[in-house]
Amino acid sequence: MQRVPSRAWAVLLYLLADHFFGPFPYADAEPNLTPPSATPLVEFSGSLIKRVDGRRTDVQVFAKPGRIRLEYKYAVKTELGYSSIEIIRLDRHESWFLLAQRRTVLSVPISLEDVLPIGPSLPGEQTRQLLGDATAAGRRATLFEVQVDYNGRRERYYQWVDFDTGVVLKLVSQDRDWSIEYHRIRFSPQPDMYFEEPVGYTRWVPPVSRKDKS
Image (cartoon, rainbow, N blue to C red; front, side, top):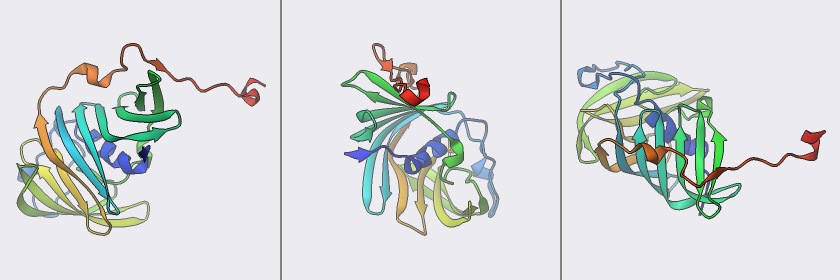
């Protein structure tokens, strides 16, 4: 079992969140051009593999503008038990862990300020160099080398961006053992119900302590 991903899976949050607000003309990019922070309005599903320090995590991703559903191959540990499904609602700044045995939704606040500097337009981005055409997830992509300096941390990345949609298909750090990569991805409408609280589930309310009562 895995523990609830915090800053590590926040990478994925930033990666997907950065895809939902307007055009992203990568096809016309020139070397050292820093792209805008916006990318096309897209809906998709895909199988994502994340590797950190030799450890692999598999997750199925479903995405709509402002909403993300993560289905973990191995359940993650929360304060209430294990959950294999997480729904990220960027529009509400909340992340919901579904606990099937308890039929409970555990809501956790999202702070984008804590998100790692990884995404189509990286926080603290210093330089961006167009390397050329490439392939990722079986799709035509554009390969960039990106350097960032964020919160005093310098890092270099290779970034594969889907040629047609502007979605990041693969992201690899050159300075540590960290990467995310879609092995399969399909661009198609996603059901609204994937991103809502399931019928029959109740939200967990933290118990009131004696100190709070006083």
